[in-house]
Structures are given as structure tokens and as C-alpha cells.
Length: 126
Image (tube, rainbow, N blue to C red; front, top):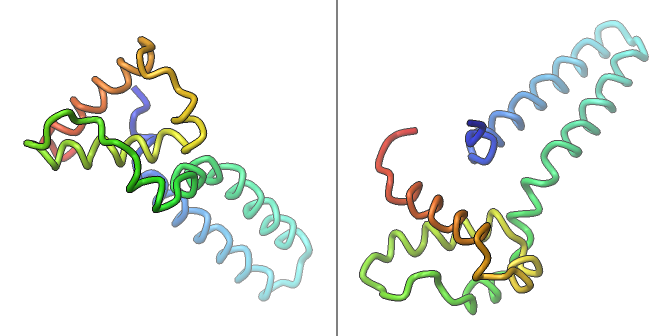
């Protein structure tokens, strides 16, 4: 139901919202010189870090060498688009350390993998 929370567009939307809120408070602070706007700026920056940090750890959790060494999920190389999509979903969902210790035979992982394959094969706009 809340699959949109994992999309890049949701993250970009949050970033834009935080930039708008911070710039509005900066503008109001320079107009009025009230301390309450500084508090708003600090709280907004703190909330932005608290909210967006989990999304950025998924992008920073893998080094390029680890990505190239990782064995792709696909057994055959006939559909490279699907393989790249699944690999990117893996990089977003797991850090390298989590992926190394992950039980690849667990039902939870297999469900995630099948859902990811369905999403990668889906050609819809949403």
C-alpha cells in the first residue's frame, strides 16, 4: 500500500519540500529578525536529516568495487535489463554488510526477490 515511500521521486519530493521550508524561514528571518525562524530552520534541517538518512545509506552502503564483484541475481544473461533492475533494487534495499550475512534461501528474501522481479517487469508508468 505504501510502496511509493521507497521510490526515488518520493525522496526528491521530500528534498524539495525541505528546501522550500528552509528557504521560506530564512526569508522570514531576514525580514523580521525573530529567533523563532532560526529555531524553525534548525528543526527543519534536523527533521530532514532524520527522515532522509535511511534513504541515503542505501546509496552509500555499497562501494563501486563491491557492486562490480557482486554476482548478479540472474542465472542467464538473456535479459540484462531485468538483471540491472534487480541489482539496483538490491543496492537500494540492502547495505553490503547486510547482503553478505543475508540468508538467500529464506522465505522473506525470496518474497522480496519475486516482488522485485514483478516490479522490474512491469512496464506501467506508476
